[in-house]
Length: 470
Image 1 (cartoon, rainbow, N blue to C red):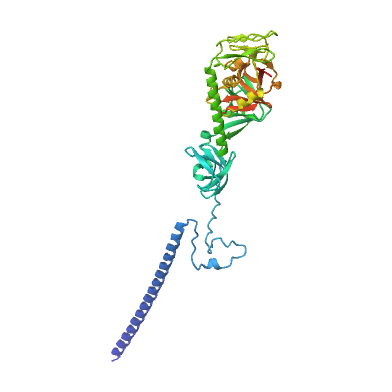
Image 2: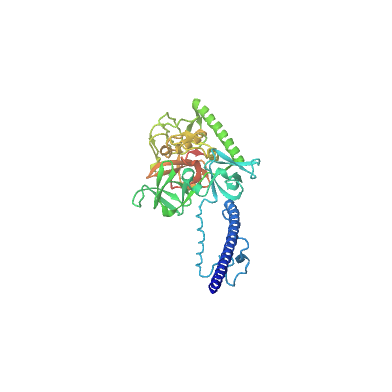
C-alpha cells in the first residue's frame, strides 16, 4: 500500500516535470519563430529600399544614398563637430577623409579654337544656322573663344566676331596637337640690332643684321639658337636669348574682306594681262624728259641680261647702257654688274615714284616663287622690281646684283618712293625692295610671307639706287 503511494508520487512528479519541459520548448519555439519572421520582414524591407536607391544612383553616379529615418540625420550636431561627417560608433575607427580631387591640367589653348572644317566654317551673327553669315574661318585658321552657348561658341578672329558650332573647332589639348601643322613659329627681335649668323656659334660669319621688333619665320628651334628666314635666300641663326617666340595662325576672313580680295585679284590679273600684251608688241624707243637725257625701251624686256642694248646720249657726258656685262664709274662694290644695264649719270627714265609705289602695293599678298616674275602667280624679289618698273617703261636687269649697279647711288636715309633698296650677304647683294616712302619698302620677301611690306631697316640695307628722275 505504501509502496503504491510512493509510485503514484513519482509518477505525478514525472508528469509535472514533462509538462514543464514541453511548455518551455513550445515557448522557445514561438519566440524563435517570431524573431525570424521579424528579421526576415526587416531584411525584405531594407532590400527593397536599397534596390530602389541603387536604381537612382545608376542614373546619377553622384547621387547620395541615405537610409530613411536615420536618427543621425535628424539629431542636432554636437558642438564643434561637422554635421556632414560620417557617424562613428564607440570603439570604431573613423574612416580616412577622401582626398580632394587633383585639379585637371589646363591647356594654354583652352581659349583658342582651330578650325578643322574640310574647307571653311561660316561665322554667324547668332548661334543658329539661320543667322547671317559674317565671315569664314578656313581650315587651320584660329580664333579666340569668348564664351560658350550650348553647342556654339562665340569667337573673335581678325575682324570677325560671331558664332561657330563647337564641332568645327579643336580646342585645348586637341588644338595643341595641330599647332605644328597649321601654326607658324615667329621670332620677334627684342633687342635693338641682332646678328644673323651662318652657324650656331658666335665665332662664325655674320650674314646680316636685323633690327629690333622685326619678326621672322622660325625654320628650326634648338636649345639656344633658332634658325630664321630673313628673306629670299637669306637664312641664318640668331641667339634665342634675343628673340621672343610665338605662334602665328591664319585668321577669319570677313565677307567684306573676301570681296575686296577678289576685286584686287581681278585688277591684278587684268594688269598682268595688259603686261603680257605689251610684251608681245615690238619694243618702241621712247625719249625721257629727265635731265640726263637717257633713253629707255618701253614695252619692257623679259629680264634676260645680254638681250640687246640701247644707246643713251647726253650732252653732259652720259654713258652707254649695255645689255651685256658692264661697269659703272662708282666705287661702291655694289655698282659692279655681271650683266644688264649700268649708269653712272642717273635715271633710266622719268616717272612718279608714288605711282610706282602704289602700283607695287596692289600685289601685296601674292606668292613668292624663286625665279618667278609673275606679279600674280609668283615672283622673287628682283622679278618683282623688274615687273613693276617695266609697267612704267623702265627696263631693269633680272637679278638683284645686276639691278644694284644701275641708276644713281643715293644714301639710304634720302630714299623716297620709287627708289630701289638693296640688301647684301657677306658683301654680295642678294635682295632688292622698292621704297614706298615713310621708311618702308614693298618686296617679294620669302615663300611664307610672299609679297609684303617691311620697315626699310628690317635688315641692314646695303645701298640705295634712284632709277627715275622727277
